[in-house]
Image 1 (cartoon, one colour):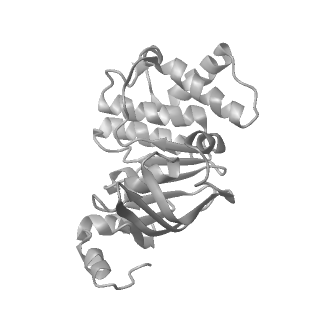
Image 2 (image 1 turned 30 degrees about the horizontal axis):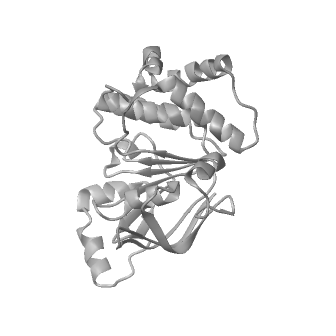
Length: 256
């Protein structure tokens, strides 16, 4: 599914990613952890094709196809989805209209027939039950006046409708109370599938207790320095990043 090799990238002339190596097989959920400034969100934005992020070296393959040369629209059509750390509000643009436009744009990009209004509404209503969204939210502006929990549930709802091949969730658990976290986690688990891979970016293991990953990776200094099973997240919570950071600064190999 996703293979990242020796990926380097800079933002505003500053090197952020310094040789990322990561493979997420088809059907697996991987978690990416690390302190602030380690490059996690930069990696997510590079994969999605956000402007201003300059790739200076490396390769990213999605299903064997080079991703870095594609526009953001082409990446979305190929099945890449990014749930934002801080979802933006788009006043005046209805949630339903926005999502139908996005879905049909992707379907056109794949040479598929567009959904008419009725078929899309049936699809949207079915998917919104997975994340416990009220129907009235469909008529509101995109994230306009939404609570933090509603914004994150709306992101998972968008993922459910778009059905990506690769879903990247950038700190979807941030700012959520326990009830909202449970709803979001159930929505993510409902979308786990043999044909879909997910990369969950998070600081805390509380999401990973509800969405148990196949692998956990630790990013420090713009590269992945350690990988392990789900228990690695709890080890990091107990011990912090200090030991790993010290090893990285000393030039020691800490990958596992």
